[in-house]
Image (cartoon, rainbow over all chains, first blue to last red; front, side):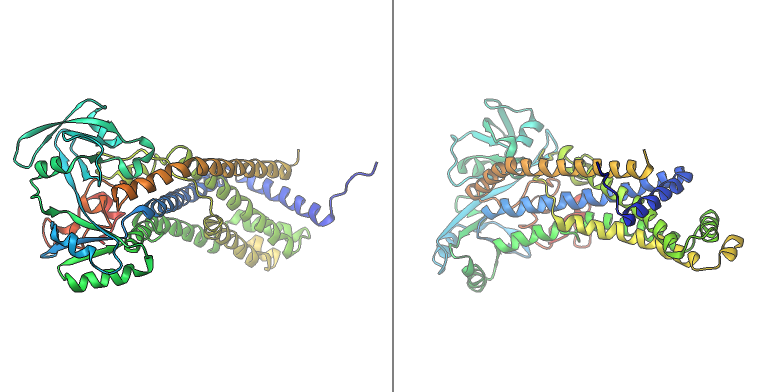
Length: 383
Length: 91
C-alpha cells in the first residue's frame, strides 16, 4: 500500500513551525505572559463589541413596535404636559390615522430607592386599584400577584394598590421597571388634571409620510417637538455604535496596547533573538527562511490569542450574560433587567477584530527580523 | 508527537469550540426570536419608545424622549453625574 506523502512545501513549513515552537518554548515565561495579555485585550474588545452589537440588534427589532411619531410639548426648553385638545387637532393632520394621548411618568420609590416607570396602557385590563408590574419591580419590592403595592401620591397620602400580575421575565428588556395602572389611578396619584397628557403618540400608516407629518406639526404647533420613529432608532444606533462611550474606551485601550507591543517589537529585537538570527544565517539559513520562522512566530502567538480571546468573549457575553460588563452598565441603577441577548457572530465583527489584532502584530514581528536577517551574520552576532 | 502536530491539534480544538459556539448562537437565536417578537408586540401595544437598560436617570431610561437639557437640569452648567452618562451622551 502506498503511503500518502506530504507535499515538500508543506513538510518544509511544518519543520519551520516545529523550529518556531521550540524557539518560543525557550522563552516560555515571557511568551506565555504575552499570550495571556494579548488574549485578554482581544477578550475585552470582543466582549464589548459583541455586547453592544447584540443589544443594538435587539433594540432595533424591538423598537419596530414604537409609535410612528411622539409629540411632546416644550415649555421654556423643557418637556411639559400637553393639553388634550391637541389630540383632536393632531388626528386631523393629513397622513395621521390615529392620535392617542399617552400618560406615563417616573416615580422614585423611597422603599427600594429605585426609579419606576408608571404607564397607562391604551386599554388597561385590570381594575382600578390594581397594578401590573415588571420583573425588576417585583424583585425590588418582593411583590407577587395579590400582594399590596403601597405608594406615595403627589398629595403626600399613601395609596395601597394591589399587584394583579407580573410581566414575564423574558420581556425584561422593555418592561423590567414598568408599573401599569388605570388612567384614574395615574391621574389621582400624580395629580395630573383630566385634560392633560404626558405626550401624544401618532399612527402614520405610510412610513414615507412621517417626515412630512412631523414638519407640518412643527409648523402648526411651534411649541411642540415631534420625535419620529426613525429618530428613536437613530438614538439607539448612536448609543450602541462602536463610537459609543464604552466601546470607544475599550477600543482606544486595545489600540494603545497594540501600539505599545508593535513599537516594542519594531524598535528592535532582544540580544538573544539577534544572536539566534545570526547563528541561523551563519549555519546556512537564507533570509526567506529566517523571515518565515519569524512570521510563524507572530502568527502562532497572535492567532492563538485571537481565537482564545474570541471564544472566551462569546462565553462571557452569551453564556454567562456579561458579568464583567454588568457593573459598568448598571451604573447607579437599582433596577437592572436580567436579560439574555441574541448571539451575534457577524463575519464583519470577526474580520474587524482579526484585522485590528492579528495583522499588526504579525507585521510588527517580521519587520525587525527582516532588518536583522538582511545584515551580515558576524555583525549581527557581535552587536 | 511533533510540536507542530500538537499546535495544529490545539488550533483544531479551539476552532471546534468556535463551531460549537456558532451552533449555540443559531439555537439561541431561534429561541430568542420568539421572545423578541413578543417584546416588539408589547412595545406596539403599550406604545413603548425605549429599552429598559439604564434606569438610574430619566434621560438614560428614555434616551429617545429626553431633551437636550435633560442631563443638566439641576443647574445649567452642572456636570452630569451618573455613570451611565458615559454610555448615553446628551441627545
